[in-house]
Image 1 (tube, one colour):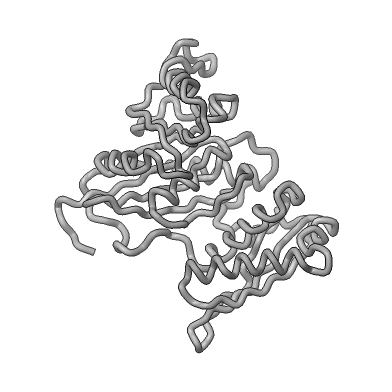
Image 2 (cartoon, one colour):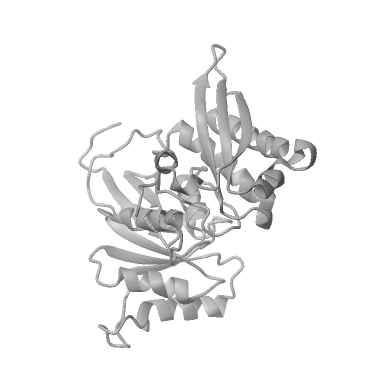
Length: 313
């Protein structure tokens, strides 16, 4: 890591409503997978930093959970993590689903950003599947005509410094966005080694990869009442990694869904998670999964620490 007066480094808080494509965008900017993604909303639960390099700039990208109206304790912890992720940011990047548009969930985030002093940019994502004329309409609305609460005039504006149109999935517009983010960073020595791409521990990465497979393979069959806890993570003498995890669900019927007929589903989940972890870590991985029913797992303080969330009342 070279300390040079020409270096730039800053924190970018990536915020937005659930399923806007924040994690996919962070992965695209970093250039490799650091956050799990799935078609389901609210996939990201805790703050995660992705670290990208662009020229002389190091971009610290805080991938935050989607911001929504919380109902459960887990929901409240996720939303709290999202807003805490913006603390101390040099720039806030609001990611909006260009296809989904400017609904109440986006309005909620906009209202929460009003009055904040940080520089803000708007990123309209999923341009590869969005209607182009509607995209321009969304950009204009988000920049110019957003009503807030009663303390604001109805025509009060929240202008963004810049607006970008990207597809995190295909990479369209991402290089231009990355260059602009780098140029916006303050002069500073880099905070992380050049080869580090995330602040996540290997235990956290292992749990997240398995949770991603739960979402991808079970789709609508399993609700959000599930979690993955890494119970043991160790290296074997031959350099391979041994990981033991428990999948927590709230009901016995959910356990049956995860196991599948004759255990076929959990075997497939384990096989795909094992392959992904081996690819990420560059060594063979021995992954052992079991499913535990705990109706009160969301009230377990130690689990919140394990998945990177603060306990909230």
